[in-house]
Amino acid sequence: MTPLVNAITIKRGTTWRWTGTIRDDTGVPVNLTGWSVASKLRAPSGTLLATFACTVDVDQGANPGKLQIYASAAATSTWPLGSALWDVAVTDAGGDVDISRTVNVRVEEAVTR
Image 1 (cartoon, rainbow, N blue to C red):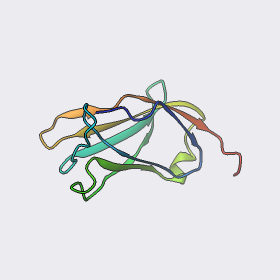
Image 2: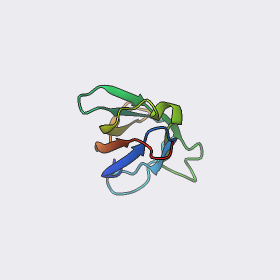
Image 3: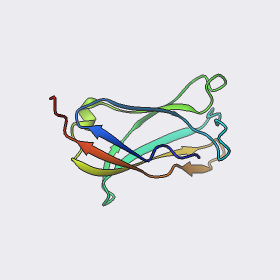
């Protein structure tokens, strides 16, 4: 699986969505029909902070590899400030698992709240 991004910042109390395309090692989008996707956010200590809702685009023929990862504003409002770690795991229909590179996440307090 190709890398996601290097680092992101999420403000507490905001709705967070990541929409992207899962690609193989050659950069070709992967048809995710029949695949499952999981994604979590953890503190550097390993403590689970969030289990994200993951949705695969239903039209993988037209949009291969497309998926969305989501956390509600209510969910992000409970996250502790500071550093966290995020990745995405995809499991194909045969049970093979591939996990993205770990992304550094910075959780900040919103100024406007």
